[in-house]
Each structure stands twice: as structure tokens, then as C-alpha cells.
Amino acid sequence: MPQLDKSILLGLRNGQLKHFEMVFHHYNRWVYNFAFDLLEDAAAAQDITQDVFVQVWNHHESIDCDANFESYLWFIRHLE
Image 1 (cartoon, one colour):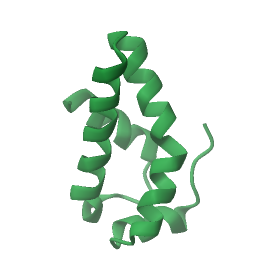
Image 2 (cartoon, rainbow, N blue to C red):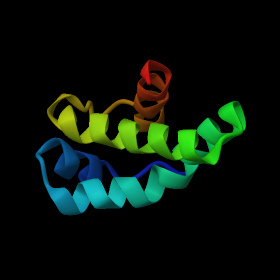
Image 3 (cartoon, rainbow, N blue to C red):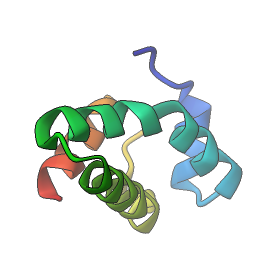
């Protein structure tokens, strides 16, 4: 999956909702598919996907724009 432009992640880190929405639309299906493949339960996969993005928003100030954002999402998914 192609990485998002660093400026989008910077906007997210700065709390800009439109940048969060861009991140959500870019990675939503990726997170959901991983959860569904693991759980084989659509409702549970949707819950995990929602929880992951709630965590992204709740901790947006700690996002490292120079790091791999997919690794960050991977870490959050494993916490859920």
C-alpha cells in the first residue's frame, strides 16, 4: 500500500480533522481486511477498525511523521 504524503500525517498530528479523514479513507479497508482475515467475523472486524481509528485520533499528537505509519497502525491493531 502506498504511503500517504508526509504533509497529511503532519496535518493529522496537528489535529486537522480533514487530514484524519484522509488517513481513515486511505487505510480503513486495509485495517478492516486484516481484522476480518484474522477473526472471520465482520462485526468484530468493524469494531476493531473503529477502535483503531479512535486510538489514532485520540493519540494524534504522538504520531511520528517520519516513521512508517503502517507500522503505527499495525501496533495499534495488536493492542485492540
